[in-house]
Amino acid sequence: MEEDEARPEPDEKPSTWRRIRRTCYVVLSLVILLPLTAFVVAYLVLDVRSPQEVLAELDKTASLTYTDGSEMMKVVPEQGDRLYVRYDDVPPELRDAIIAVEDPTFWQNEGFDPLGILRAAVTGVGGGSGITQQYIKNATGNDQATYFRKFSELVLSTKITQQRSKEEIFESYVNIISFGRGTFGPASAANAYFGKPLADLTRSEAAFLAGMIQSPSVHDPAASSHAHAEKRWNYVAEKLVTRGYVTEAERAEMRYPGDAVVPPAETRAGRLTYNEYHVKRRVLAELEGHGFGLDRLRQGGLKIETTLDRQAQANGEKAVAEQLAGHPDYLRAALVAVEPGSGAIRAYQGGKWGVRDYAGVPQPPGSAFHPFVVAAGLRQGENLDRKYPAPDKLDYGGRTVKNEAGCDAPECSVRDAIRRSVDTPFVEMTKRFGAVAVSQAARDAGIPAEVDGTPTLREPDGVTIGPGIAVGGYPVRAVDLASAYGTFAAGGMRTEPYFVQRVLDAEGTVLWEHTAAPTPAVEPQVAAGVTEALRREDGTAKAGSHRFGDTGDNAGAWLAGYTDRLSTVVWVGADEERRLRDAANNRVTGDTLPANIWRAFRK
Image (cartoon, rainbow, N blue to C red; front, side, top):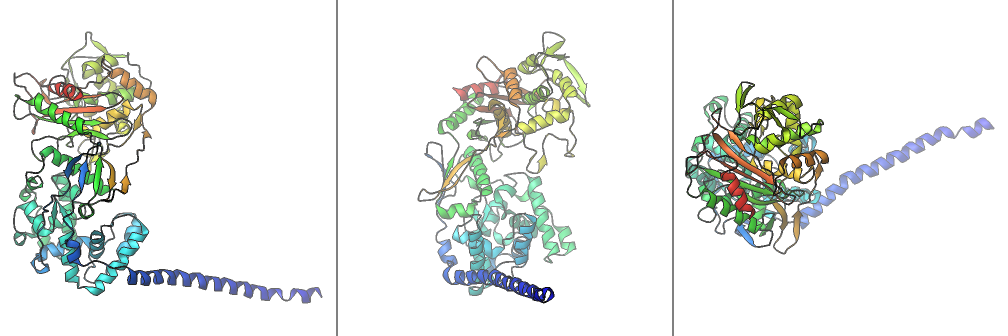
């Protein structure tokens, strides 16, 4: 009987497997049918406006405001900078370059490239959106990073591909996208970058313009550098070869058209001062990183609340203008003020001398870099009263370091050396603490690892740390130095400097808002020690100048200081490295013109 009762057991396994199979069939059916059903429903419900309707709304502008809500400027000129171009009038070289870099399967796909999307998802690298998808995104003004937006984009891309020809889609796309410099469409872009009609573009110039589409506020050489723009151009040129649009021989004849690129004077067109232009460019680059490209901004009538304080900005402009008045015309200046603890940029003066943003161009900080040497020492238990040799000059790593000021004795304490801007003791300190430790202290405080793809605080090889680290020989940006000093002011809490506080739509709905995220970066006792070393009677810090070789003259002069409320950096220099002299032919040092600007700003 026991054996008979056990016989049904073998039948139980087939029954179990049948249930598993049925479950798998149901799940598989749902996996296939649900997305398909959703796609069909969305296809029937969603609709994309015609290119004519979209282009009719391109005159909306976005505005930038100060912290008090008053308007600073318009992001896009009200009359626009756009010339509509028919498909047949777009040079084949430009069409090829755009398709090669933006959507190589454009002529074959049904609105999107599944492999491109999958590749972007797997690698985690941005991209994957083809020309039709980009058109849909710009036409709807929806650039939010949501699954629904992406799904809707795929549906509408498929729908418009079935309703319109590829030529119509490309024509609509190329006229709606931004090429940077406030331009929309290839005709305006050709004039903005090369000062010529669209039909006169060379193949190399066409490749340059195609490279701007991805991120014009980054790839424009006026925004970054020609070195960066050339890297992007090379990328486009190689895509032209690998995707069969040009031969290897034709590629060999192409040259980066940097010499033909004209300064972006038209971005001002009598509407903006150069300093307003610098602010606008920085804000646009930041917005682009948050998903608010120029195409989206100009359609939505958005309001961008910035961190800039109206009075502080006016004070900065006035201080620079008044304190440089009467001095040699070659002198240039920049001023940046950052709020410690938040990173909010309260004042930004990039200069009034053209499109070069002096607050955003790396310059050797000289003795303004000393606090990071001190921070490295404090991390290793250094005492501010420890004394180091302070000869008038010494050779270090093949370069001569010479003091502008000296100590009262052959040796100088850490405290006295930093207050008097005596360089040679900092060479000895760097030998003791290690160049790597000094570099790391600066990194932790807020000096970025790279700027526009170029490593900071390193030799040209991007790896070696040379003797320049001891005396501020490696270039840094004024905005980064102000931010790094702000870390000390905030007790060691680092925050990224930023311009954009909030983005609102035309109805006042908040679309995006900055969230402060202070990071413990420098030990509180180390930050307190640096502050103690720098402290003056008025509670601020002082830093000095970048020496010109071994002459004792200056190639750049700095003054950096902070309170618990504001970290402010002033730089005075020239377009080319030269010995700086004021109207009385005296040397320009940190405690002369930069200090005058700094004090005038604080009033």
